[in-house]
Length: 143
Image 1 (cartoon, rainbow, N blue to C red):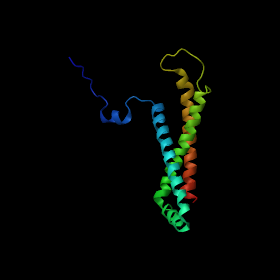
Image 2 (tube, one colour):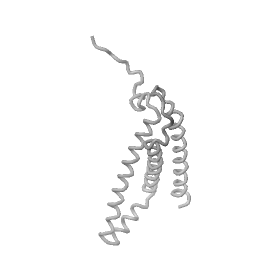
Image 3 (spheres, rainbow, N blue to C red):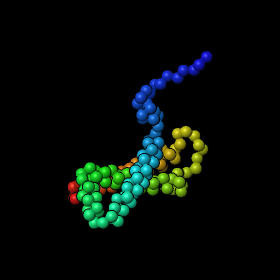
């Protein structure tokens, strides 16, 4: 006899993670943003090394990187950096015990997670949104 489990969530459940909480999505976005910032740094080192080949190559590279496509890419990297930095500060506060709450019996749902960590998450995400909006204004409007 084989057990058969119905897939109640379908493709949406596969893409969305089913019953994942917001913290799980923040974990994934934090990892992706960190990899994106690392990729940007490697590309920046490669782009800066063009200077070795002389001023003509350098000017050609800078003219190529001055397109609107790269301006949008610069904003995406800025968004990833802002999110990764502020979410990292939130994680440091949690790991050091400043945002854990009082010790209690570990019964689900964990009250310290809901009462302390969730409001901290909301504050940090609002701060990230404000920093991203300010950076977007600087990149697109004031430039």
